[in-house]
Amino acid sequence: MVTFLKDISPFLAILVSILALVVGPVVSGRVSRAASVAQMREKWIYAFRDTLVELCTEFDMAPEMIGNEGIMGRDITEKDWELMKSIRSQRNRIRLMVNASEPGYAQLIELIDKVIGLLENGISYYDNFYSQVEKIKGLSQRAIRVEWEKVSTNKAIKLTATT
Image (cartoon, rainbow, N blue to C red):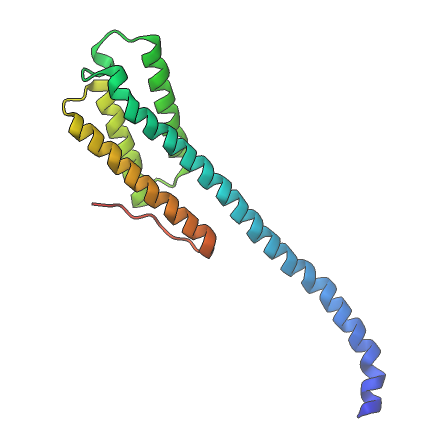
């Protein structure tokens, strides 16, 4: 038995070497791809968060700049155009970043559109405006938390709508 093992040991060494040459790159490639996907997702989360922060900050400031008659109810200034251009640009960026078929993201986009409509057409009740902005902030926090869970668990988790 010992002589048999001595006789086949060179062949076993070659076989293990060949196996390592084939399996090593495959395993390494999968690990590298998973790390790359996680890194890209992290960058996406940071960009998503930054866009939401900018948008919510502009929503917080907009009523003082525009007033309760809305942007369409008065003479539009250069500052009005710049503000609305920035808000719409961020809304469009968010729309392109998320999967609108997920209920939570659909609700987020719907709330953003509703607040933009109030800014354009007039804010009749500031409490309603600010409550909508607070809903956007809350849903945004949940969305970012869900995305971080996806990175940490490497699983597909869906954002659900709130009531």
